[in-house]
Length: 286
Image (tube, rainbow, N blue to C red; front, side, top):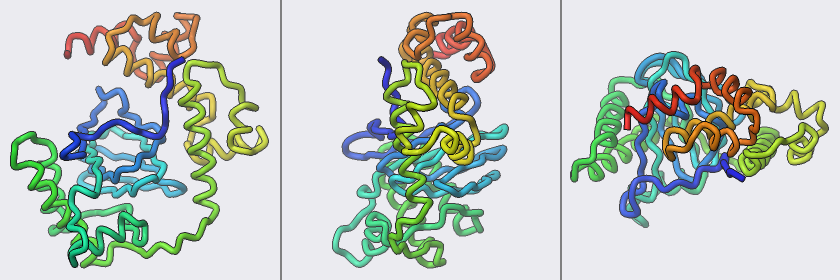
């Protein structure tokens, strides 16, 4: 059984500098960002086109140069529209000066006492910080970690100076409850990605009736449950074809399809090309 979790646990960067930079265009296997969450903080910048980002119960449309801030543990996913976007995923510990005055705001962010704004349409000051941050994060020179940390601290200073944050009161409202239900469902789907799941089975994980669950799932993701499960299966198959060099038959079987022709039709629908063409394309790129 192939497991695909919606909670990301991959190692970012290195042990000494836990930060990952990702450049995402239409050739990336996770171009359509599936719903997931991670313990790290994330910044997303749109380079071109637009990106519809779902953060919990909120929907944000990002255009060129717009910036999104995603706190630790927040469930999120995105749908691009002719977009190229960049992501920085990092552990805030890399920029902390513990017990000093300049650590107070960052410590409050880490402890969820304050929540920076989720959306920024940058002014000149923030644009300068944004350009410096993503430029430094995208290179591997020995000065890059120092520059990245400096720009991240400038970003948080910008948030504090311009009151681009709100204080959290930790009220467990309906949005938090819904997010918890969706996290449980997505994790269950990921754990059973190679199996045929029934609507009743997935509904029980959310603690909802099948009828209400269908509406709940579509409102949250914009897809039906089975459409989303097929999307996740095709994404997993694409990652296998791209990164492990497995055959089309092996990828098909790993995500629960014994009928190779049906798998091929679904893969073409979600990925825009046949699995064999996808495999050949990325074999040539590597």
